[in-house]
Length: 167
Ligand SMILES: CC(C)(COP(=O)(O)OP(=O)(O)OC[C@H]1O[C@@H](n2cnc3c(N)ncnc32)[C@H](O)[C@@H]1OP(=O)(O)O)[C@@H](O)C(=O)NCCC(=O)NCCS
Image (cartoon, rainbow, N blue to C red; front, side):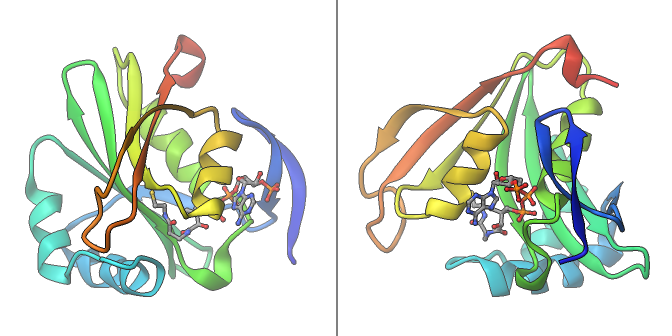
């Protein structure tokens, strides 16, 4: 793997030598984002769903690109008052464990002034996602039984935001 340990806001994680560039997604990015979601998630949003999401004033849609411009991963969140709700996060399967999701989260937090807390739901049977969120400081604050259409439970996770997250 083209990676090395590097300090980030979340401590030392493996970061690709080819650190991703994280940008706000535009309408033209919906197809690439939907492609990553279709591969990564059991109930992915459609391209039209992402395209609509990108236009919402409360939506924060971030896209990570590699040095050749290819889409590596994305993060979708909603800002409501002093809270950020992460709605969707995925990294292309061949690109994981290189710091892409960490870079997306770091950028999403650094771009929001006056943020107090970030929260999200994660499948209780998704060990990889739970390991990632634990690594970047999220802690369980609740459980919603049968939350997902296939009957899986959702673990509610939250993480306080401090001035150290702003850049
Ligand atoms: C969860 C996900 C977004 C993580 O993306 P990523 O770019 O691989 O994450 P990072 O490289 O930034 O990982 C940072 C740290 O999180 C932890 N981590 C990430 N993936 C992990 C895994 N599969 N198993 C254990 N720990 C993991 C590690 O501590 C990692 O640091 P290290 O690689 O130096 O050990 C990715 O696995 C994914 O897209 N999964 C499918 C979609 C999904 O589950 N999304 C979340 C739904 S809420």
